[in-house]
Length: 241
Image 1 (tube, rainbow, N blue to C red):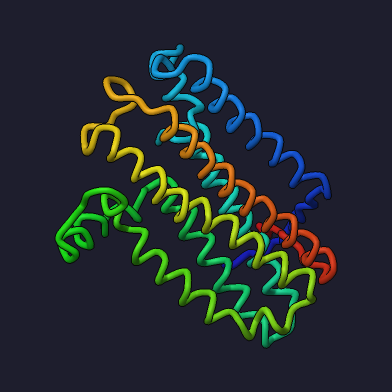
Image 2 (image 1 turned 180 degrees about the horizontal axis):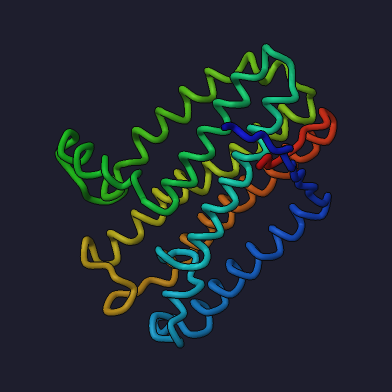
């Protein structure tokens, strides 16, 4: 016998102050990392587990989780907007949500590092900026994504379209341009042997902090824009059980 029970639906309301709260957390990570490198220098690796805990240039720590959570939160908002917006925009919002979800997964799994060896072998070098050659296919992918969303952006309010372009530019500048700059400094400092302990470059470490700063700024700006658009469309993030 099948027994039907009433569904209980919980709707999540997000405060307008959420982007500022997220920016505050990001600022704590970025400022503490930069300050530690400026004051302590090469000793940051042994500064009471600093690098393993809150260094924005390290992996598998709080900033890594935070970056991934930001992207997944943005993906959730974009998916909610897809259900509330017009039919012609629905698939574009869903595609944006999927892209943000994959970016959040990559933040933890570092899938983007896989193409570096392949691209380096194709070009016959892995020195200098080619040490992280994944930026080449990533740049091509960014260009393809930008072109594919042009019609979608034209249909959006001017404040949203211009804001998303700015947010994307901030993220790409940090993730690709500053990545190439830091990789060049890293290779010039110690080649493939750079580890931040035996070989240390304050310039490299601060550029790496700048990378994360621009990435945080891009994602948090995106969240703010999506929240505003979601409020305009009365989009809801709900859970039905």
